[in-house]
Amino acid sequence: MSRIPSTIIVHGGAGDIPESRVPLKIAGVKRAVRAGFTRLALNGNVLDAVEAAINVMELDAAFNAGYGSVLTSKGEVEQDALIIKGSDLNAGAVGEIKHLLHPISLARVVLEKTPHTFIVGSGAEEIALEQGMTLVSNESLIAPPAREALQSYLNNEAAGTNELGNEKGTVGAVAINEKGEIAAATSTGGITGKLPGRIGDTPIIGGGTFCNDSICGASATGLGEAIMRANLTSRIAHLIENGTPASTAISAGLQFMTDKIPEADGGVIAITKTGEVGFQFNSHRMSWAYVQNNELHYGIEHGEDNIEPL
Image 1 (cartoon, rainbow, N blue to C red):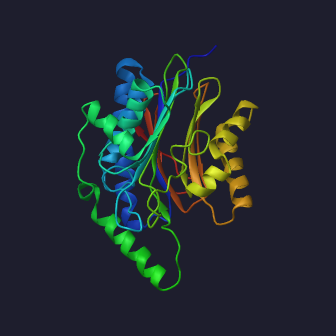
Image 2: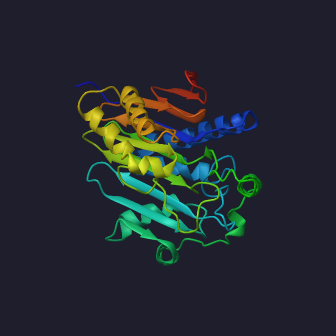
């Protein structure tokens, strides 16, 4: 059996990303994937790797996670996150988080410190306090682009357009080590203008995030309602399990979703049990980056694959 190269891939969200934000997205996913790979190379811990990568993006206002999360119709941040360990399928998920900079780290606490899988709202934040995490004001999580996006949404609603925001900047990461252990994680602020209390696909296992060492790890971004209804990452994993190459499986899963739900779009990253990397999107753009064999690959446009030394 050939050696599995330690690998990590991240995405910074899909959608109608304007030209002005492209450099910020590219720089952010490159920083994140380097941080994640540094942790992966240090001790091979795949949970550490995906958490570290996502923590970087949760600090970056270019992404819809942590600081910079988009706002509900009432102007508040409400975040969802999920992290999964593929060896035993153990997972931690949180939803409706209003006072944490790093919801992915709280999701890991749920995985490692509780007997539960999915905890939401004040109950999840109480666990954060018990574990020594710092709660912050909701206001401190709001970046200027999020305010602008909500105002644009409200203006469109007043004009009768009433469409949810198009830039789904959800962040995600998947990592595999040389032993074939996989972890996957996703973190998001949701969709601009969502109703308070709405939970998206991100913390739904098999919806926005999937991980099983015998198949693959995957993280999705896009219209959460559609991703959940299509069981997108679970569908993609089933195709990979039956021999479909990773990127082909992702394209097929996205096509299924769009055929059933025409207004839907999005993207997915994945790593298979053999270390094969896959990424595809049917939205306008999706920022992504991965590290494998001492090379850093990245892109945001369709068909793009830029390479530079690690």
